[in-house]
Amino acid sequence: MKSPGDAPLGSTYQVVARRYRPQSFDTLVGQSQVATALSNAINTNRVGHAYLFTGARGVGKTSSARIFAKCLNCETGPTETPCGNCEACLAVNDGQDVDVLEIDGASNRGIDEIRELRSNVNVRPSRSKFKIYIIDEVHMLTTQAFNALLKTLEEPPSHVKFIFCTTDPEKIPITVLSRCQRFDFAPVEADSIFKRLMEICEKEGFTAEPDAISLLARRANGSMRDSQSLLEQLLSFCHQSITMQDVNQMLGTADIGRIKSVVGAIVDRNAKAALESFSIAISEGVECGQMGEQLVGYLRDMLISLTGCGKEHFLLAQPTDYDEIAAQGQRLGLETTLACLQIFDESLTRLRTSSHSRVLLEMAIIRCCQLEHLDSISALIEAAREGLPLTVNAAATDNQPPAPPAKIAPNAQTKEIQPTPKNPQPKAETKKKEVRRTEIPPSVESAVEINPANIEGYWLKTLEQLEDIAADYAGNYLSLAISAPNCLAVTLDSFYKEKCENPAVKSTLERAFEETTTRRFRIDFVTGAKPAAKVQAKPTTKRQQMRDLENHPLVRKAIDSFDGEILDVRKT
Image (cartoon, rainbow, N blue to C red; front, side, top):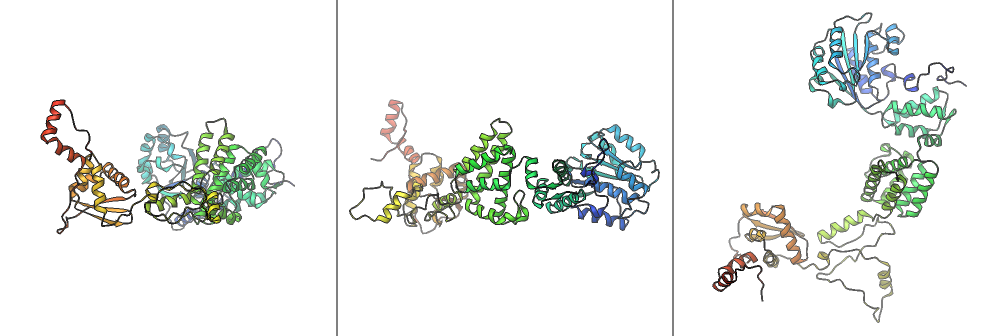
């Protein structure tokens, strides 16, 4: 059976992307908003003189420009539905219409070409209603060329229309943008690409597995032309039937089941199983870079499921696998998934400059298998900062350490495990042997009790330990208060508040207060007035003590006699 694309040997063959190019707005895929706007402009006689079509490659910009040109110059037009059979429509389809001029902006970017264009715009069209200039990749024009085009673009003859196409509108001068009607072409949805590719396969006489065509559609990343180019390659590779195995073999990618097994082993923290699955994929002919890209895509889909997005947002995995991927994501955790993505991304970046691509990816897999359950670790850190009981998230994997004891007594000191007492408790003792103790910051283990009654004493003791200017600034406090758990509010006048809010000064005070109390507090500085009934005891800092001693007669005489200086003050 011959397909429509079959041609005698030696004859001219036209690729799928050109043979199935849309010829009307009805067949334009994925750009309904553009088709509707241009059709309404024709129907209401509001056709402008300059249009700018922007968007990624292969989304239909030049095809839309050709369709619009046919709509304007068709023998039955202007009409939103060109006949496609008249001389003008056929000439536009073949790119040979003398009144529809397609110009490549990359190779005709100089001022001389624009001068020639300006000299020709006043010549009326030979047979059609309008002379239409389609300039592709218009952002490649030079600044001088754009400037030479401005006047003609703003006030062209009534028979001239300009249609500019570009993938980079940011490079076009604002003076040109303001003279055009701009239409932004969105990436084509994967479902629309899938339907179009299935239609092409049917017309070409091929049968195809839906999963195989779905993979091509998602691989195109919103570009209809890219998807058709991949399909063209696949039609040459296969024989009347397209399978998922054919797609993977042609693209050099791994089967989705192989990707699942590698990620599943990472979730289980089983480095041996992950490396074995990876090795099998490489032995099947999968290229290392492609395998890494697939792992990133799969982890990305897992991340999407963790954030609550639906299966329609998947880029690599099949939508039917949503529940399985979501379950893997819940076991791995959001923070750990993000860490795995970063590890693989860094490895792929290094892959471009390294000849040891397989080793780099194997290192990345092992590093991912060694990751802790980061969601639980972040929760432990937050609990430690807030002085709350420490518990491990129940979503942690089985090989993660259980949570430490829920209650920690104040001033408790870390003790070594003593020999078994006379009346042992078997259950508790067994747990001690099995549990790997989670590290707890010293500030939580030996924390003192801080309350409004003793807060000022600890504050004064903190300032006495400091020798720099931070103690002088903070020593002028007006009042102290515990404004929230692990949060100390220090009231100062505006001058000293500004000094203490300096990041270096604030960090010094918080660190010194933590060393004094063995509790981690956040110190906030507020502006206020000194309480009227309170008699405040000012701290005597080391700097003040050193200044006072310098004025003592005996100390002064010793300094002069021995040419010395005071380095430290110690209480006896």
